[in-house]
Image (cartoon, rainbow, N blue to C red; front, side):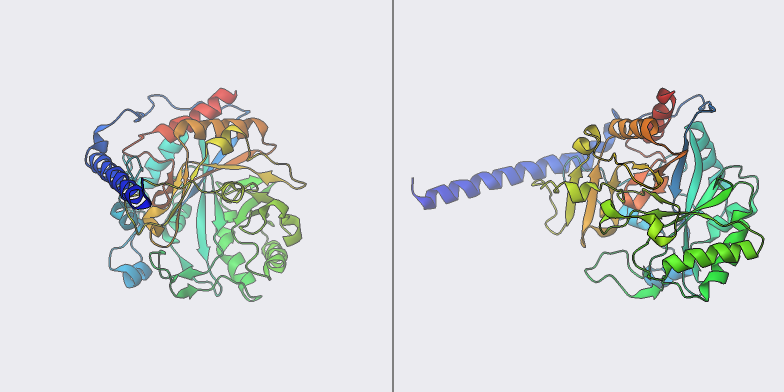
Length: 405
């Protein structure tokens, strides 16, 4: 057979495969909602707290309400829910969109939904929320209203702490190749120390605030992007003590760059902490993405990672010369935000997540374990129940905690 005929046959079978993929995809998009085989209903009883339980802290995104900045940049009324509902599956079997049940498409301008979130968290063994805190040089803040509301309402009887998201803020969600215009500056100046201290003292002094060794815990996201950070941490402690408050227990997230050699002590911090894919042993540094040939959308840019080997082989385990607070995550998929500019999908089922969390609970040397995340809906990373899996990730969390004991 000559090369021309072979080439035509190859193209023919490729076209057949493409056609079959499209038929399979169309059926999945139109009918997948009928499949409830993986849906886990709500538990009837509540988790019984035990004295030897590790404390599970879930990262919490305070994004879901209308703010003037988003009205200006993305159109009046824009919230994170807009990102969530506009995305489609990119292949047959792709879990998108992620759509909430129970708490629903909520508005965080009021605390009513927080009461329900706390009920769910307690039912399934979550011990506290770690709120992202967007504070920028000069004292500018964004999306702070839900956290302030939580602080004021003492009937929200649930432990909490702050995660300082100290990174520049741009006016785009990454849909374009350009990353937008920088709107807020995250690099700190000496004049910012006292302003930051004054803003966080009310949180630190709250009886619900999470502490370790008598000190309020503070997570800082970016350690390498601000050369002034080591000095800022020292000065912040002094500023707080001068106000009669307590020097915080500072935990730094493992950075993107060389996490395997990261040392928080060099930044005057007390410990390191894992957050989402920001782990000491990062899967996308240790494994190559899997090529998915069944993606329908030719414009989609997605790096896909199957987490099975990473979890079953316990690649995430590591020893450090400093305190490390381990973290686990539910599945992660930010195609809702970055499908055209470069999305990541770290795929793990509720059962794999449970196995990962269960092992971390057995092995960790620390009192706290962090879970990514309570409600990162546009990154497909949420414990809150959804239309496909129901309460599966919450139930897996509770099962891992209870089976440990």
